[in-house]
Length: 547
Ligand SMILES: NC(=O)c1ccc[n+]([C@@H]2O[C@H](COP(=O)([O-])OP(=O)(O)OC[C@H]3O[C@@H](n4cnc5c(N)ncnc54)[C@H](O)[C@@H]3O)[C@@H](O)[C@H]2O)c1
Image (cartoon, rainbow, N blue to C red; front, side, top):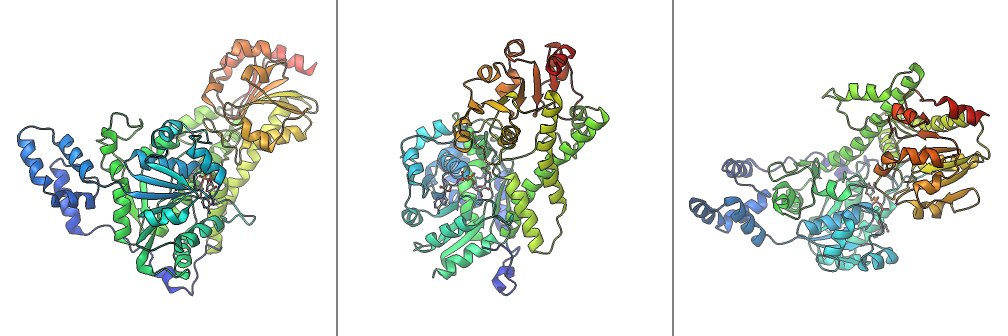
């Protein structure tokens, strides 16, 4: 399915930018209530609140010095009906979204066409490593969240249907939208009343139009549905906390009816009520500082997601390029990154040099964004450079290993980390896996350890005489010629350095994540190489290797 706008389709351009927020009257009421200290979960909830008469009651209660906040919260919670939500796709995004919607008070049906996955979830197995997910699954499984393969039933019962299926990269670099299309067609076959279909998957601009067209082609009347873009910005490893404490919620809607439903769904967060809950998952948002909801056109929302990921990838490649310059100039990239990041216009985040970005999002989203720009006649070659720097970063790391060990064939290496980043078991597009494969191809033998990603990796790189999966850091390090750090798991930053030195055959550490201070490593007798910083070379150990 192409994502480019069809110039012959008048509808494809007519809808652009039509969502301009709510009317001024609504704005005035909303403002005056807020002025008086009222926390409104959403405009429509606010109207229901006024209509219920609770407004007058609340004022009387406040005269009797009853906490208005708690009164209002009780009123709001007792009168608000949980919204019936379907989430299609129960992967890293869909499952987290389903559990978090339940945590916010909604009723959720989570649909997946993978029967084994559905059975496992029904049985209480999250299948993925993600903080807080097991406890939420335990709390809501088969109560507020049901798991099923039946999209027809979910479509029937739910007001909003979130599509959270994969959008992998196709051979041409475009996003493969066939899973999204399949879900849209199936939803269309079962629509009997008004539905809001929500793009949660990361999709290129104009996907919204295609979904609408697919549904209409399946015979559904235009008045029976709206398609909304609600991109997800969670990070694996902190996905639940990110979902419940987002920097922003983006709702791209070209219809006020659909926007109102999305506002209601997110009201427990945007109104702050969720954060009043003593058992709320901790994070950065509070009652006083709830997340903002940004309402945009659908196309803007689609572009916001791709542009955000592309921008983050730019930041990573930028600091990696700077790290290469630092290596050439014998400067320290950590000092440089700190100096850059203290500029409030730039900020310190995503300025950590390493072995390049990976995972299921950045590589494919950068490629898809570049591709969609190209299809629309916009030159975004800058992103090709970003990809080039990223690919090169792995090759540079391999050269570092070679420069530490001279030849690679027959060398025994301990590898810490297989996941694309710490705190997850996701190995999709993991630079660590790419490096392990490069090392194996060079004739090294590898003993790898990862706290969560070994089972998944074993399906891609089976254990063999050359590849061993270790039971711990120490087990991986036994008799190794060098230790490589490839994933930023917090526990890898707290190794017992004395013990490690005694376990390795040669005390050489090549750190692709800059988890250690070179001086500390030197004090502990290591030869230590990292990214964008001068190597700390322990003369005795280097002599030992070269001997
Ligand atoms: N993983 C992330 O960190 C992240 C963050 C933000 C956005 N996203 C985006 O969210 C989307 C989903 O990503 P993910 O990592 O959760 O993918 P995933 O591969 O983990 O999960 C996708 C799920 O969809 C299911 N599925 C596929 N076709 C289906 C169908 N026809 N009916 C029902 N279920 C179906 C699959 O079985 C799978 O369980 C992607 O577009 C991704 O780019 C991902």
